[in-house]
Length: 382
Ligand code: PMP
Picture 1: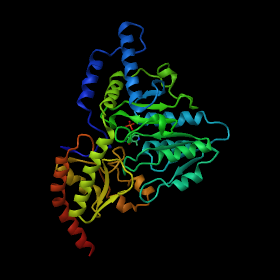
Picture 2 (picture 1 turned 135 degrees about the horizontal axis):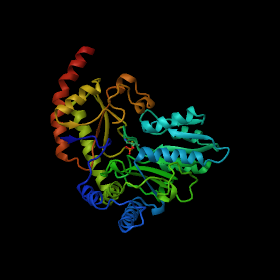
Picture 3 (picture 1 turned 180 degrees about the vertical axis):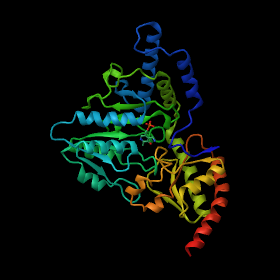
Picture 4 (picture 1 turned 60 degrees about the horizontal axis):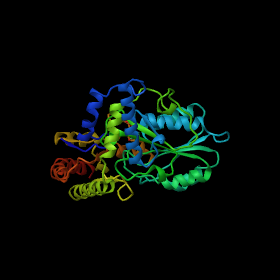
């Protein structure tokens, strides 16, 4: 199989599995226990925390381990809201945040919190002028993704951080798709809270973190004594060790990003040459290196995915969590893409395991399967 769905999840690196196995089989004690095995688990947890902090540019005390980005996002937003000063009731979310995060925005709005959305432009980039108008002195926090999971578009986190800081608002960044794919440094990113998820960078599912800046005004939401009282629940030590191992394996992130971007660009250029009806969304704006969000004329996404499946290529029609449904992507909707075009969206997302041979295969095998369908479509439209 050729796996081109890395934005949905990534295969665990072999070293990650190797690091996790002994913790599953032998190092399973509760890190809160006072006996020897418990204390050993506690040391393992501390070592993993140091590795994560070192890799992400934060202090070990700023790392709160969670079950993944959904939980981190919810914890961040609810915790920042609970700590908001009087007079700061309005909250702002990006309009193309992850579907689960926008559900939370709707729940808050239904509960009476004034929620605003930061719009994007037709190319998927943040409308920074609108952000400048919206981020005012009554805003408690802004919650913005670093990079979009469908288009791959990178959001101007530093600019929004400056706007938030000037307005006295907090900033939460969902860096789930960014971390591991592009260089990241918590100390200099300008955010008060950052969410991440291990399975997007070669780690296991069910492990993530919320990085919380020391001194940030935030109230714990999941109570218990673990994580310095900031997230209760017995730590998932094998997964945490796997996440730390995945971060330690990342190596030269910028070099790997350049490699993936070159493969992605060659794929898009090759497909466009052979299939002139190809449309690539957000081409030419800063994007995640391996993400390509496209449509082949007006071929419905299911038709294209069916051909890809026959070729042994795994891809998706957008966010894995919402694909399978017939509703078009809310991300494309926010970009003003008509519904019928949005229903044709296919996402090919490359990753660390993608090779030049994989892309050569896509270029050799896919156009001959799609070209006749596109010719039929053109003839029917004529
Ligand atoms: N935010 C973004 C941008 C994502 O892409 C995802 C996963 N698709 C999530 C949050 C949720 O992550 P998790 O699976 O760790 O809950």
